[in-house]
Amino acid sequence: MVLANYQLIETIGENGLATFFRVRQSDEGPTVILKTLKQSDPSPEQVAWFCQEYALLQELNLPGAIAPQSLQWDAHQPVMLLEDRGGQLLQQLNYGGQLTLSAFLRLAIALAQVLEQVHSAQLFHQDLNPANLMLNPETQELRLIDFSSAAQIASTLQPGDLPKTWARDLSYISPEQTGRTSHGVDYRTDFYSLGVILYELLTGSVPFRALDPLEVIHSHMARQPVLPSSVAQLADGQAIPAQISRIVLKLLKKDPSERYQSVRGLLGDLSRCDREFQATQQISDFALAEADEKGALIWPNRLYGRQGEREQLLAVLSQTSQGKTALQLVAGEAGV
Picture 1 (spheres, helix red, strand yellow):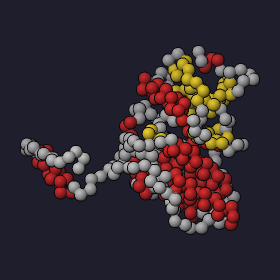
Picture 2 (cartoon, rainbow, N blue to C red):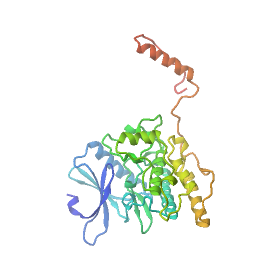
Picture 3 (cartoon, rainbow, N blue to C red):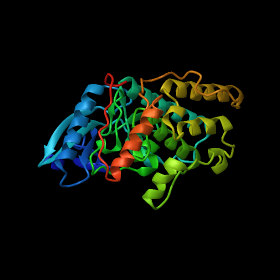
Picture 4 (cartoon, one colour):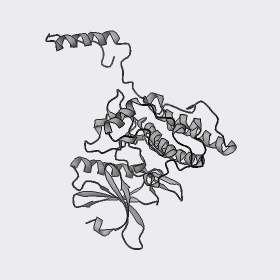
């Protein structure tokens, strides 16, 4: 039994799929993070995703990603051993609404830098939330500890591409991840989730909270978040600068094309805010995303210049739905 060989130091926390423990093999040995699936009897699909995540972590070698040590088996349950750099889950540090502007900007820049590393590796995380981020307050080292949902940045996914047993924190999903919009899920979903995290760090609350999961989903799709500066103040009693609120709300745009299109654009704005505040204790109003760039070629999810053909097809569909028979042919090269 693998678990019997380790001494439990503490339970770090859990996310939708896994539980994290801090353990050591002997009294004087170094601590490691032990990750197991939450379900005692996991499905073959869950086990496969768990093992795929370990293989991905072995390939990544990113400063902002936790390093894997080994994959072992406890009976039929896979167990992942990960490097322990100290710290706690961001979820458990309870920083929300407790940060000064300088502290917030440092953490926001660190979060953006970690995301930049992920996107530079041609991946998008797809499940950014405080339960998947570990921060060491002493060293300010920030790391992602879970990549179970990561996908290739060149791909566009549908919400059903994840296992049906996946339990997500709906507070941090993007509108397109609800499966109820016309947009596929691509790397820009990470910007929305990061916007929720930054909103929570500023105000102490996520933008949309409700007991009914369907209400949360509806809010992501249809409701506009309240300005952070209207919800809370900073820890020192100062008002949240309007420019910071604008940056967060840009991340929280419903349409992915209206968000930042690269981490470079976000980092440029956050870094400028930090420089100005350190120099003058003020942040000026400036145009957002001036340093932005297209991170990947995203194909549109709509047809252009085909209104007549579309109406013709819909007319035939309407006729056949009433019992008529029709044959409709489409000519031309594939894709035109």
